Amino acid sequence: MHTLPELTYSYDALEPYIDQQTMELHHTKHHQTYIDKLNGALENYPDLQDNTAEVLISNLDEIPEDIRTAVRNHGGGHVNHSFFWPLLKKDTHPGGAFAQAVQKSFGGFDAFREQFSSAATLLFGSGWTWVVASSSGLEIVTTANQDNPISQRKIPVLGLDVWEHAYYLKYQNRRPEYIAAFFEVINWEIVDANYEKALSS
Image 1 (spheres, rainbow, N blue to C red):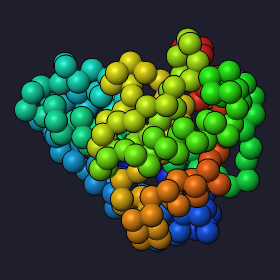
Image 2 (cartoon, rainbow, N blue to C red; image 1 turned 120 degrees about the vertical axis):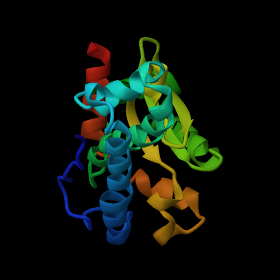
Image 3 (cartoon, one colour; image 1 turned 90 degrees about the vertical axis):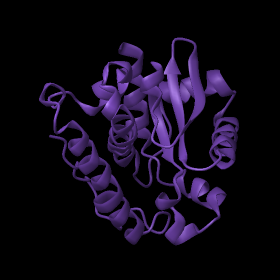
Image 4 (cartoon, rainbow, N blue to C red; image 1 turned 120 degrees about the horizontal axis):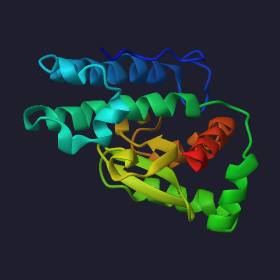
């Protein structure tokens, strides 16, 4: 059954950009709830229980109809958050193949940051903003709720949770401030590793 991944850093490691209380609640309550509900949905389907959550949401058409929405929502929540936590670390800098791809696809880091921030700011309601990799370069996309680009056969290399639970304790309704803070805690080494992996897949 699916379990909560441990963080490799303390809940206060991202202060002052993302506060300790938000991190603890986000990880132990919100993410755990997605896992609990995903496991509950799979309870009567032992043949699906050995699949990773990534496999499940990549093949939603093959999921029994009575649990498909639950797998989409809660499986997606599990995948998204498991992808998100390693992306967070202070004091790293863009580099490697990803930085080269940013230059090629957006004309520079400033333009990339502006486009990503705009997409995240303008996303209506709850969802995620992503950078996905393809043979033609990098693309910024958004998904509603807990949907993930892999359900659309796209490979994410960076993602930002813009659900209010990710920022409301510290930033309230000031989503643009949260997005700006996110850029202070992106683990660019992981982003570059994700991009290299995407290129080889």
